[in-house]
View (cartoon, rainbow, N blue to C red):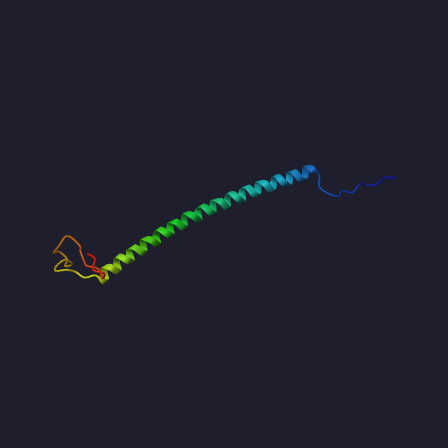
Length: 91
C-alpha cells in the first residue's frame, strides 16, 4: 500500500517567509505614505502663507483705492512720504 500523502496547507517556514515579505512591503509603503503626508502638510502651510499675504495685499490696495490724499501728499515728486486717509478716517 503505497499511499501518496496529499499536502493540505503551508508549512511554518513558508508562512514565516510570507509574513516577512509582507512586513517589508508594508514598512516601505507606510514610510512612503508618511513622507507623502509630511509633504502635503508643508504644501498646505505654504499655500496658507501665500493666501494670507494675498489677502493682506488686497486689503492694503483696497484701502489705498478708497482713501483720499491731503494737499500735495500723493503728487509724485512733491513729498517723500506716502500718507492718505482711509475710508474709515484713519490716517
